[in-house]
Structures are given as C-alpha cells and as structure tokens.
Length: 81
Image (cartoon, rainbow, N blue to C red):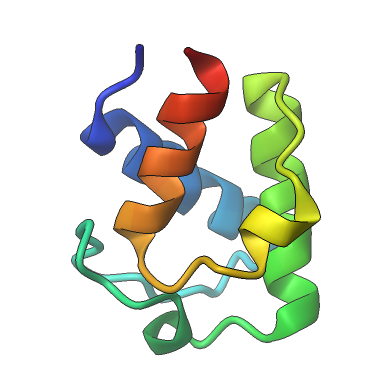
C-alpha cells in the first residue's frame, strides 16, 4: 500500500504533467483541492494522469466528494487495497 506521502508526491507530479507552471508549494493531507488553483478541467486531467500511473479507475461519484488531498489519499489506498 502506498503511503500518504507517496500519493501526495504522485499527485504533485501529475499536476506538473498537466500544468508545467503549477505552483504547489507545501501540499499536505489537509490541503484543500480548491486552494491549488486547478479548474475543473485541469483537475480531471490530473485525475486521469493519476489513474494511468496507478492503473486504477476512480468512480465519478467518489471524485465528486473530494475536498482535501487527504480524501484523495484515502480513496487511492482503498481502491488499491
């Protein structure tokens, strides 16, 4: 199972693939996705990159409930278990 830090790192790498100018700073489990300045299209592109890297599919109804990075790490850990 991947640690929270590994998933956060993967998220940051995925954001940079979508937007090479992204300024993420210190991203923690408590960071709200809305704070990162990603619009809905960019967010879906980042999710797509993460799904590809992890070989997982995130259910749309689960994605709609994500508020913080910690929600994303829990989702990845649950789906990968």
